[in-house]
Length: 308
Image 1 (cartoon, rainbow, N blue to C red):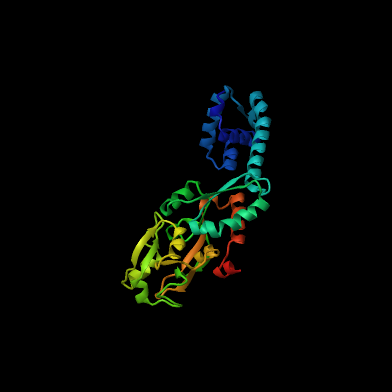
Image 2 (cartoon, rainbow, N blue to C red):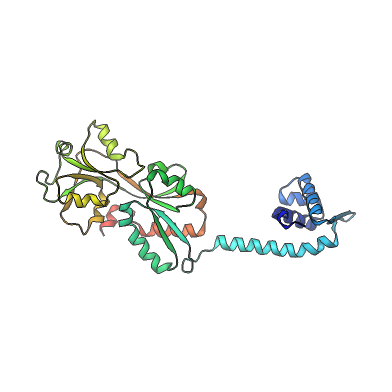
């Protein structure tokens, strides 16, 4: 007998026929037609070089060769199923050595990652976190392929086809150095458009909420410097008269950075919606569920929590 050809479906069919002693009843239990069961029995007979079942007035009775296989196969199948159920229904964070990968922006790494990493060190000491910093247009493929487990951020291109939970919505503000020579507590639209700007354009992202808002009022800002990430912007602001428009919560990444302040924008921009997203195929995974719960418990659900 070729073991590679003896698949799990054939085992189930052999056991069902032995149980019911009837091809039709075996098919009904397995959701198969009588012809499908009969065809599989033919395969089994060839593989085992034995009739396996003989038709009698008492039904399909197993041959000695079939009898020798039934009990071991039944036990093996039971052990296999119990093992499968055990691995999919249990997750022990304290002993797991699983790795979870999270897609985060640079600001997200500054604000969210310390909270998550500190808590995991206590409740899941062997669990590993891997932070991915990819082009935004690569997020979909990374989540679908299992390269990433979660994504956190403002990701409108992923709203369809992914599970998601809202964390908070946040307005954009205008950031500048505290002793800016021309702008005090407020900024006018004329001042905003006349000033030079630092623009943050992450790779793979199309026009953002700010660009859309400026388009609605048919205005353009004067961009002096384009950065792929947020990190360097505030350091440049401290020693220049540039402005930088950023989410309000970004200022919490600057708690130790002096001489930077924020003022409200002089025009309306839609609030940035920060969400936790994951792929549908991981939705029922116990470890994934545990990790999602931890993230949602730890991360702020409003910007006011960031201030506390």
